[in-house]
Image 1 (cartoon, rainbow, N blue to C red):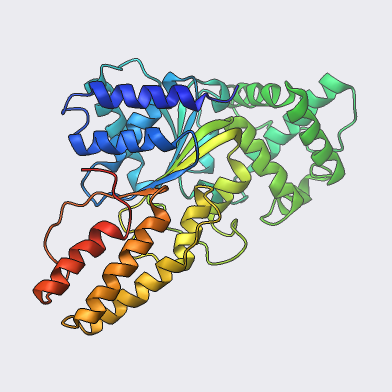
Image 2 (image 1 turned 120 degrees about the horizontal axis):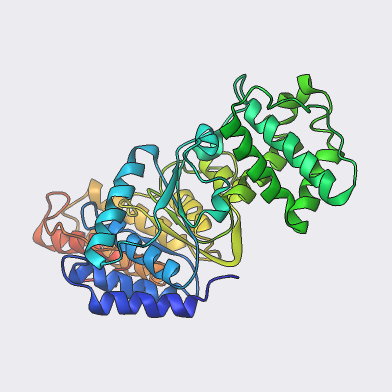
Length: 385
């Protein structure tokens, strides 16, 4: 059942109201309340400057969603996964929530078949901590695991439905040990256990004859093929549906094409990860002012915020460019101030940003220096202290 965002809102506000400074700073609490006001309506971008604790704010949101009975997936660059795990453990200790679920970390395709993982992850009770590169896995010479999984799933589907599934890789997993074999069996049983999953997989396996002829299976699972789409769906089923997706460093791996699936992150978000009907996406970034219009559109698309007028972003960038060329020009400074206000207003419902640097970002006159501070604080809406 999809999560009730009104309950999430209640838990967020309660967390903000009762949190000690060791758990959430006053500024972090203000961002948590800002999220509480918006999470039931749409996605959001938390754009606090580096070092102000965006991850801790996200942990409070994860906690609130799980308290309301929802599931969460965090997508982060590979180098930050253990940092996330450590931050979550610190948050749980400070919040007195030692028994809250642990994240299931998945760095790449091999992790799907790690014998230490309770497989399938969808039934494990964990929230997901995924590498942003997870969607870029390739079918290589050592990936007979995928063929074994699909073969066993075909067997289970046939047992459930008595309907034929075209396949020919019966012994694809024979070389794996008993633990791995049991893991594959559990996964296949889960995949074939629900009618909606079963029918999608049965139709795809049969229509595209993915398992017909072992030698050609890997080619049928290559990127861009119908088989690859079916494999992505299979992996999504095993991960399970989530209610909240948090995308760390959302400005990275930007798509500059109408095809939002061209990057590993795009494939993970749009082809692999399954979400509930009313799911929300939250993005984290420390560099919103540096984004151009295409990057803003890509970032907002990722949090499923559409229809925002981004012309103020274009105007703002042009005005800043002129002021950097002529830092003593008071007219240029005034233009930046007006553009910053318009830019802020266009994004105020979706973006929150806190700053800790009070000094100018470049040398200029007192008048331009004042405007420059306004650039920093107004380019992205700040609803925080």
